[in-house]
Amino acid sequence: QVQLVESGGGMVQAGGSLRLSCAASGSIFSINTIAWYRQAPGKQRESVATITYGGSTNYADSVKGRFTISRDNAKNTVYLQMTSLKPEDTAVYYCAAQSVATYGYDYWGQGTQVTVSA
Image (cartoon, rainbow, N blue to C red):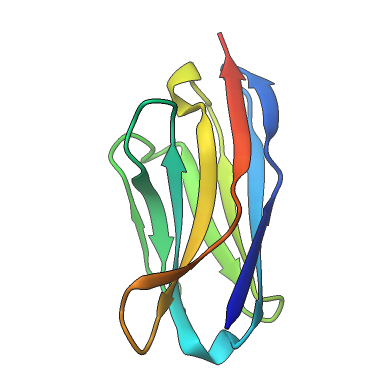
């Protein structure tokens, strides 16, 4: 089993920045890619950014150039640096880990709220 714990959410004004962290514990060897997802009220959960164990990254078009995903494998932690935040970035942000056995995102954190005021 893998446990994921997010932190770093909060309330910020438009144009501000936040850094989210996702700390992984447990059977770390069983996971590869880590993703950040978000879900706004009344909307479907969407992928924001992903990072492989080797550091390859991918971003949703809506956050390209504003968000940066990174990972510190020694600390088993993935970060999401968010800059130039917009009110539409308001959501609960979740980190998820891809299982090397199933290739699915089988492990999820509890989520952290990000609120961006206009």
